[in-house]
Length: 438
Ligand code: MEV
Image 1 (cartoon, rainbow, N blue to C red):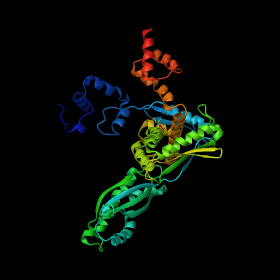
Image 2: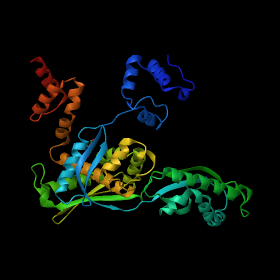
Image 3: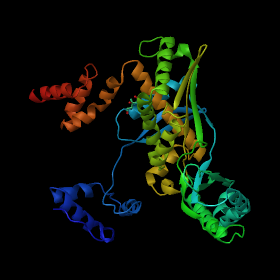
Image 4: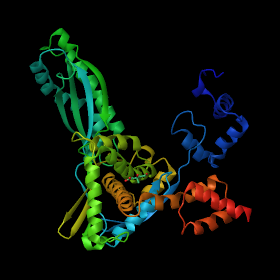
């Protein structure tokens, strides 16, 4: 029978491991050995990782890979990717190489605006609230001047503060809807600090606003928090080439372009397909976000909300055939940072950013969007030609063989064998057993 634990966070790492292993695992000694095996051999590096989060007992590895040959705005990049799914990096690399000889990827930043809101309840005359807000606005800015000073020196800061009336939806519900420019920082701490100060100033100033009745003076803040929905922090990435240069999978350029564009139209109109289509895009996006120490949950939430912004979940990518020109592009909201957070703390994140030539946040937005577009190109190309399983299962072969306990020699032999045979769980098992019995 498991029992609750008191003061777990205060225990030493060894005590935490001992407790968890004994309480929840069949073989506590073996569990401890696994956890310890994944510790970093350098105690300083381990301490760094321990302190990223709370109650750390080990490290959780993901493969860190690179996809080379990305020509983006005429510069050549190798893109670092952290992801567990086989064939994603291979697909990105293949798409990069395909577009390398067709002009590469072009990108454009469509906006970099971040959003945060103070949600509050005011039960009183609307007109009075609006007059109060006009007087309050300069006070709000003044109240955060020590927080915004440095950001403003670098050209960022608070863009706009609006009063929004949502009292039709919820009785008395209003917002301070604020927009920010956070430059190379993702800006979550900056925005939340500003918002929490806005909330205090809003309440304090309301209490002493002479034109308010006692009830109106009592306006009440519910919460203050940034929004991960950033429909004006958007980047566009595009590839384009003559249709005749698109021959793939035994199809003519024209045949391929039409089939590809059809697949995109389906993903635009059909939510079941759109979700999987966008999942493929996120294979590329998340892998770069993770490798560069950004917040993939924030990006995921914002991207999917954006994909549904017109009332129905839809494709993030678009394709057009105009005369002899095929164009394929993505528009995606990405609130990213290349300073602060893990970017200076995590040695691999620092290295990933160095590999990317220490990009600004805008440049990272461009690179990430390109990774998403490339991933989608590769997936849809496979889907409309050979099907996804042929390539995927080949890439998955090593995982299967590892699971089946194949030796290095057996793996080598079977990788060769399956260049010419269909990979399925059963066929791999059978081929391995055959070798082993010889
Ligand atoms: C698999 O991780 C991603 C795909 O399903 C994406 C797609 O269907 O476009 C292959």
